[in-house]
Length: 384
Figure (cartoon, rainbow, N blue to C red):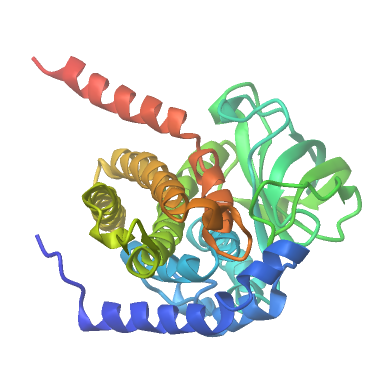
């Protein structure tokens, strides 16, 4: 068991940190306030290999592992949680094409995704199918060499802006085995988008409904075989859960660092806040929770890279713990700032708003508990 990073991993971490400090942090408040999707900053991140972190190198990816991705997303999110979270979703969609696409699909879609000339979205959730994803209704009906798609997807990051939509659609009967994954390109007749959603946080990325109405897409755009879609979606989410957990780590770390500075500067009752034992204890707990969350994310990343049979369990555990802890650390940091923490002049309220949704997306933390409990209880039932 090795807890230290390799020299290469430290270099990756430092590169991401320097980029976030230069490109993300100085602009994050303005992007949030003005709801700007920072295309050029994202393409600058892509130039460093951050748009296809674990996509193979032959199509422009970086060919790195899930632990490398966790390091990158923590650093980027310390600069801007919202923008980093979109980048994590783009990476998930690109990986799905890389992992399950054929050579023609990989070479058609991925070079423009890894450079972020094109942007990608992941489309699973529907208005009537959130946590019960296997009950999705959007249907792709086979018509010769095409599918005709009807239905809608909800809460899609990049909706209306992205160029590529990796969509889970029903091609067969009810349940998970009737779902397939089809890549739908922007500009396809019958593809449209709902209004841009007004959100609590994540304001530097657009969110909208994706609508299919008699939308004809070539069968050649299907990833894998018919009926593989639910499996593909869930495998994508294992990595997506780690990425979003790492984004929570970044937001929490930025909040913790802000609180550390503030405790050392602010005085009340004739002494620095850092000298009050009650606040020392709170700060110590925040730091401990952050370190514990980071270790769980790293462990799950190594498990996923190593194809551990329990990787899905580890990813669910890490996501549940890290996103809960991330929000709580941001909330505590805001409290330590008092009234100043509630002002937009300080970054605490933005970190709080941005990390809150991480407890909901990529599978709610209630669903993470379901995954964990089912896996552990099923294992116990198999024991003699």
